[in-house]
Image (tube, rainbow, N blue to C red; front, side, top):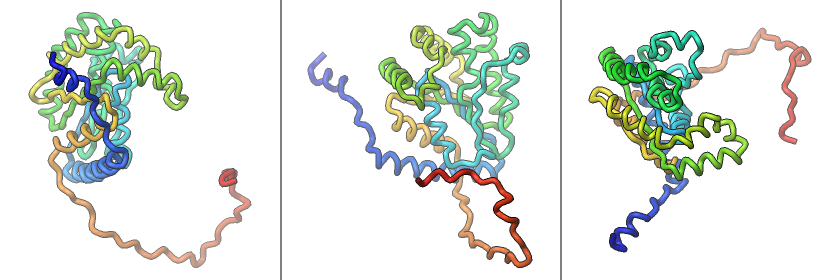
Length: 273
């Protein structure tokens, strides 16, 4: 390897300037609002699946996507471990109940792909259940698409070094400590197993009707902008922002007598001191 190529290989990617990042994010969030209104008016049904390793940045992207959207139109689904009863159901059954109706967007923070990832690696499903998932998942997704659902699947790819860095930050930062579960710690010892499981999953489920889109997430801010921008590009929409609104005059309070303030319980005003 020449010195020139070696230097190119080790060159670090320059991170986006914070001011530029905030400006670009705001632009994209404004576009998401336009998309939301288009989805509502046209009665579209949108599903986005967010998968990837622990600490890959899925939650950060979802948080920025939903920050200014209406929870009545765009909702996040992050399901806990299945109950005893749910374990006896058809595997896809509990996910189906969360699919969108007309005019809704649903973002799955992990999804039915748990079976191809954590359940496979950790031994939470049998070999037969795993093989059946690989057979039936593509058909399930084709069925969703045929029903009119716009299905978008993202895989967040994070390097071993960056994941390790993020795990350590969760150990020392109180606001992030809750994000580090025993399952996350166990996943560190099974890095190769998860890699192999992901490769097999892609081989079976990267279908024409619902392909996987890989997001390079080593730099969080880049991943957020790139993912949101790509999401917007996949759904044709028009700007149907409402015309300028004029506030009506407030109703006159004539004849209304407010009850005594002493009859109400107020929150103590600690701030400002």
